[in-house]
Amino acid sequence: MAGTVARMVAYLKARIDLGTLKPGNQLPPTSALMKQFEISDNAVYRGIALLKAEGYVVSRQGAGVFVADRRRLIVGEKRVQGITQAGETIHHKRSERVQAPGWVAEFLGEGECVNRVRTVAREDDVVQSSQSWVHLAVADVVPEIDEPRACDPTWQALYQDRSGNPVKVSSKTADVRTTTDEEREDFGLSSDREVLVVRSVYVTGNTVIGVGEAAYAPGHPLTLS
Image 1: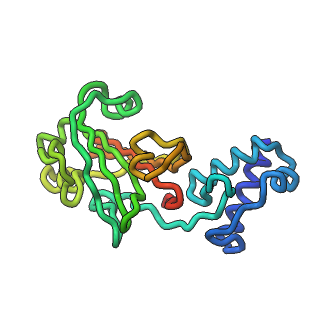
Image 2 (image 1 turned 30 degrees about the vertical axis):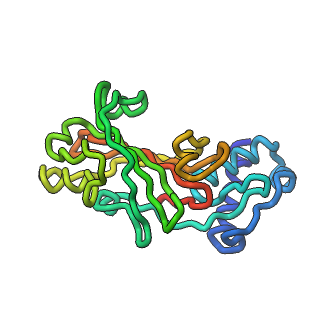
Image 3 (image 1 turned 90 degrees about the horizontal axis):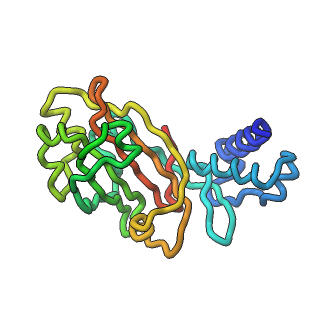
């Protein structure tokens, strides 16, 4: 069964990459995919979730699943130096010291860290709602992370410049989940929606100094590069 789902996903990816299915085109209905690949409806849904996680498609409530208009996610050195693209602006919402959530503590260790929350807007639309959790050791070098404003260009770049220790993105993972209350408010949504979420881990040497989670607004998916 898994192999059949993989073939469905590979087939749809190939059609999208080759341009046979273009941005805005609707995918075949579930019933057609079930028949073509001889799989169940749940298997089709799993395949579609994989395509969403990679930014290939996006759901429109009550309308169906459509090929996404994709652009590349800024990662690596470019992400450390500044993540916005032309026409985008950052709104820093808050910085506060909190106890590290469970999944964050797996990287930073248990205890207090600095939680920074912001949005990225393109014109009047919020396209990204993101948070970072930063190790307190960074605050000794970049005290600005405790202030309710954006760092220029990023806290990672400031730490790298001031400490002399290179900062890199050691890993990134993508997933699909439903929106949180804050994300629905940021994106102007009236109900739960599925969103692409990317988590990044920032390291200097072998030491994790921060983790980030970015949720991307429906209709503005990104391709992981």
